[in-house]
Every structure is written in structure tokens, then in C-alpha cells.
Image (cartoon, rainbow, N blue to C red; front, side):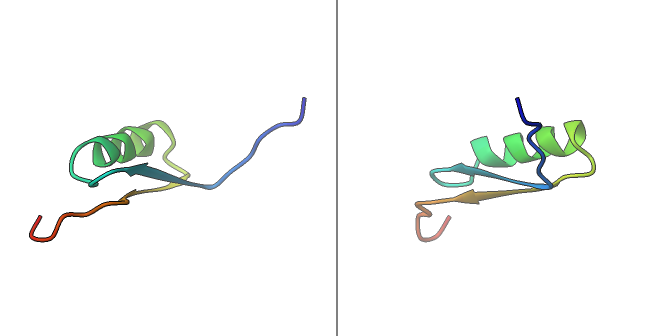
Length: 47
């Protein structure tokens, strides 16, 4: 089986308010050399 390599991870959830930011921070601690970001796909106006 081929080795999977990557240098960036994007964690996505609906609003980027709780789940994806928590995932981002956990992955940054576990994978300090990877670029990790979070995003939401359905942001509510005013939040």
C-alpha cells in the first residue's frame, strides 16, 4: 500500500463556530508541521 503524505488539512463544519475550530486546534497539536485551518460552509449573518 502506498504511503499517504500531505502538508495541509482543512477541517470543515456548518458554521465554523465550535466543531471545526476545536478540530483545527487538536490537529495543530498532533501535527505541528502540517498547515491546519478551519472553515464553515453556511455562515449566518451577524455571527
